[in-house]
Image 1 (cartoon, helix red, strand yellow):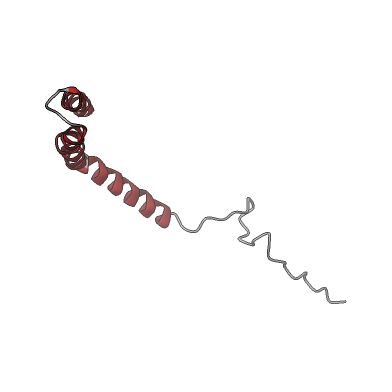
Image 2 (cartoon, rainbow, N blue to C red):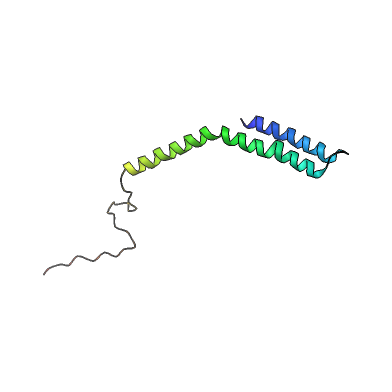
Amino acid sequence: MYIVAIAWAFVVVLMTLVEATSPQGSVLGALFTLLLYGVIPLSVVLYILGTPARRRARLCMTEQAEAVAASGPISDDPDGSRVSAGVPVAPEREEP
């Protein structure tokens, strides 16, 4: 997919150079050639052709989020006590 886009960008850059350096051409015409033949069409085509990859990535992220949610809460403590290190715990009171 990207090789065609690179080839088309190369052709458009050459068209832009010819437009800018020819006696009948202008730099403004070269700018419009670059935008109207290169940047805008390539951005639309690459966006459309990238839709399946974005959809797969979104589904993969959703499946990962569901797997994390199904696995239960995650504890930071290695002993699994679920007590945060920043929260002081009252000592147990011993009865005499």
